[in-house]
Image (tube, rainbow, N blue to C red; front, side, top):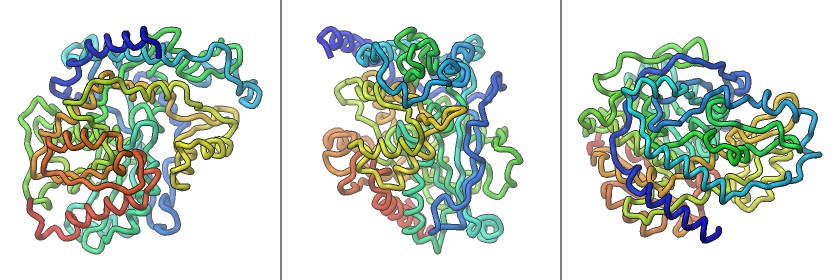
Length: 520
């Protein structure tokens, strides 16, 4: 990067320094009526048998669609669907051009430094323009986003079995790292079910959430998240992120706080009572009747919840929030606003630099811009990715899940692309000055001491945070515990699912193995 680029980024940092570290979370308003057609046909089938393999044949997974938190925290979080053509329409001129014949880099490769600068300009503009929840013009301009969630449950621990127990069910709510998807946890969950002694209190349900611009959620929302590809490019398919160099106004803004609000919106407004009948469709119904003020989030005085763990119940559930990296920050946003919803938290190498951390741009955005996102087929993608050093540390099951559920096939061909577009991954990494991730760590002090929090981190010198930064962060929450997964890097869920599951199992066993004597 040139000195001129460095100076430009330094100027952006100075402007952003204090914009993302203050203010309450925006309240949750009722979802808007849908004004566009959701491309449901692009989603995988609604149900799958045995998602955890032959070891756990009684488990099934069901997919549901849920409106995301509305409104979004900053202006410009969505774009006009008319300016964001669908893949079928925007790539029509490329349909006859196969990847095998157009895989060479097109002329005028993306200038990643310039792309990062344009991305950060957009993010800074977003920080300067937070949404006012009574601004009717802004609310009318924002599109309703959607998230896709998976529910995992076992026929042996559901229905009549749970009703006879008359106990709240243990419920895991999971959020993934940037660049991944809800199914990325399946190898770890399979190992967890193998290791967790569930004789006293089994895991009743597991819910895993796709971030709004990743996984299956990305397929539903990409029409309002900026232009995807440009048909006028002479060589056919254009990597999604290159179009932003033409017009950065096509880029939406992203604020990590909204991921926490999406988690809360799902739990408060859509997570059903476990004893209620299943919905007829794949849409979870909106739950109107909730405790007074619950959707106002930070606008109401904080209710820490009860000190007896077995009484920290919401909707007949003991909810354990589990967040990896980006979603570790998301879980902190969620639990700091409504701690009474959670019975405990597990943070997997969370991306939460302490507020005192020296300001810096997350330059991982640059790598996201230039990454490959299309292959002749999923099989070819698997072969190609296995040659990359980053993926060579992955468990084979994690690698298979990444290709199978993190990719989609191009309409009318076998060609595969990532569901999450490179520009959307870059936008999440483009946390200018780490303002919103540092804001999350600053909210750790809002978590009540009666809420158990466990950090499961990568090995020493392998974490997203330095040891010094992690210790600074932990000073904000001295009652938390921390363990490390040996020989694991930041992607510990994908690299070491068995070892990560063992640490999750220890936490569950300690707090939920026998609830009669647990008082915090």
